[in-house]
Amino acid sequence: MSATIRPLPEILINQIAAGEVVERPASVVKELVENAIDAGATRVDIELEEGGVRLIRIRDNGSGIAAEQLPLAVSRHATSKIASLDDLEAVATLGFRGEALPSIASVSRFTLASRRAQDEHGSALQIEGGKLGEVLPRAHAPGTTVEVRELFYNVPARRKFLRAERTELGHIEEWLRSLALARPDVELRVSHNGKASRRYKPGDLYSDARLGETLGEDFANQAVRVDHSGAGLRLHGWIAQPHYSRASTDQQYLYVNGRSVRDRSVAHAVKMAYGDVLFHGRQPAYVLFLELDPTRVDVNVHPAKHEVRFRDSRLVHDFVYRTLKDALADTRAGMAAHEIGAGVEAQALPQAATPWSSGQPVGGGGGGGYGNWGAQQSPLGLQVADAPAAYAALYAGPAGSQQSLPPMPSERGLPVTSADAGVPPLGYAVAQLHGIYILAENAEGLIVVDMHAAHERIGYERLKHAHDGIGLHAQPLLVPITLAVGEREADTAEREAETLIALGFDVTRAGPGALHVRSIPALLANAEPEGLLRDVLGDLREHGQSRRVATARDELLSTMACHGAVRANRRLTVPEMNALLRDMEITERSGQCNHGRPTWARFSLAEIDRWFLRGR
Ligand code: ADP
Ligand code: MG
Image (cartoon, rainbow, N blue to C red; front, top):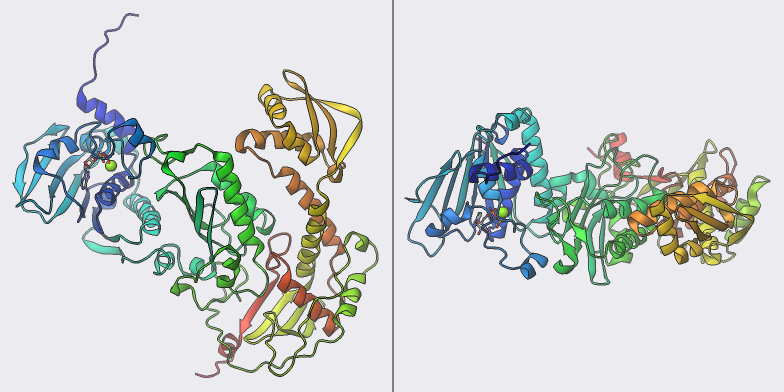
């Protein structure tokens, strides 16, 4: 077939570009607000009608555009933000492709009005059906207004895909929320159908209440501050404590150099970091800002700029994983949220987040306000006697699997209470409830501990420590296995031979798609090493590293710890219970059991007073 080749008309080119850039009203809001921010605006007004389908009007107080530049602003591939390839490789603005305005203008009734501070008056330009009008004078305060009416009026196929007003508004609000988190310095005002609907007041990233405003007080109250730099990277923001987990990934915000993006590799690193503290099937919640030299990240990989590509994604993955793993290791029982981040240069939480209470074991609804728990009453202070003996008794427990638990350290500076000695965070045991829970009194009120869950985590952490010391021994196979794999897996195995050795796998190539396996990790010899090796190779190919062996090892240790932990219905003496409480306070991740369930809860006196309607 011989077809005639001819250039596409300008309007059609723009409409094709709009297909990628303008998916729905929220994408228009995104592009326009990003332009406002690039123009240095400190206040942006967003007026919407009918979910943005009928009208999107965005006014900013940014630098404005000169009258004679208005036609350029709406022409394709015209931008003031980059001028060379070097600029592209180090983009610091949100926009740079020069295609948002012409794309939007080609699928709507469009008006651009602007004035620079130094100009006498403003000017405006209208575009309809891709046809440029004349630049006319127009009264305008310094800054820019873009008006987009009847989105997709001339593209019925796209219009059909628009959802109900509520849904489209929801998408816009969700995007604004993610912007508001990253740019607390910019004031945002939103109105819908003539009614003011949202206002983000300006403030600082870590000193205002934006976290609570955007993600809710529940998140803000328990979030742990993270801030860590190294290898030219900085990761800061908030991560949710494991007990505050979500059914979906709806509270995962990642920003790379201020740009909200999705990144599978970073998401993977975060998930790994939450590894053995998250309840099965739950998703972590976080707001994380990753900062690095712009030349180390390529932002030009997605038309709507939703994704980036790191020049060294392995390093980034590793950095994120380690930073968050360390932060989460600090989630010890008895600690308040603002104390937890201490290991990672934490600062105080935003005001909205204090006073903190975690009486509510599983985040989210239910339970209702576990309010302030300021210390008001002097604690009783039980005497702790003969602690080392108590440990021994505790760990001598039921016969059987105990050998797997390393012995308890004999001395551990246990606090001996005197009248003025501080009461430890988890307080002193007063009773055991139904052989399941320990009740303890601390300075603020009542502590309830799930004895088995807590003991299990302590045993697990100790086993991990012990095994970290000796590393992953390789167990040679009497008869080497030949493993059929894909060619890419075989390439990976060859390239990563040293990594594999460190994991206990001695693997050599035996053909284009075949491997010889001479040794496997000793601890996992009874697991299914072939499947494990395949998964490891898959990870190494995709993420440059694999935690599978460590995860498999941890699962095994976790099972061992579970069997070694005190069973329900075992009577503990008060010194035994106190020994367990003190151990929880010093054990990493002791706030959750090995399966991610909380190990303890607290009820302040104020809270208990409320049960009895006291002090009203
Ligand atoms: P890009 O943002 O990729 O440069 P756009 O099509 O979004 O491309 O915008 C084209 C140009 O118009 C920008 O480079 C900028 O110079 C100008 N512009 C757009 N919106 C604004 C605004 N709100 N304030 C000032 N200048 C703007
Ligand atoms: Mg732009």
